[in-house]
Image (cartoon, rainbow, N blue to C red; front, side):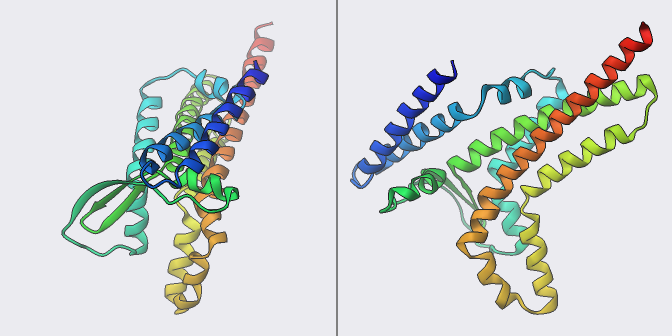
Length: 256
């Protein structure tokens, strides 16, 4: 089954590459960019181990799951850009409201294909001067993070119930909660916000802005932090499963 998934993923990646080259034809770019991106991210989805999805999708889904999933996905996909611009004061009020669909010009080097696939095509929203861009990567990682947050919330509630029954230390709940908060805060690009305001405070903003605008820092914030958040949330989820298993075994021993 694993080999079949890899083979199908390879087909998707091949289609992505073919349509990437076809996108140099400006008359086809709106269609080929969409097909290329859809194929690329479908391939990425198939490369992710099935154990990951089995683990996070096997949790019992209560209202808490769907509320946390829906709220985070809505924030990440539709409000994240607005939030970031408002916090850093990057946008200026303009009495304009618009929604547009756009594509990026394919890079000359195929080595930059993943970067192009992550940003094109995109939905650009301008709301009174505040801008948000809904791109393929933002949508893909947003869904993954929303699934992880929903699963983590369910496990925290399950752990809380078990702790209450057995009257054990509440630290068992506190640590996973910190893990969830840490995972979501990474995705808020808090390092950028902290660096920006510290620079303003000490009067060295002109020296810091080139760093925040550098390709390396952009890659770290835009790609590294969300992926790191996903890894952290998944490890947090696994640790809670281990704690619940230990509590379950302890209960069995007491019964015997």
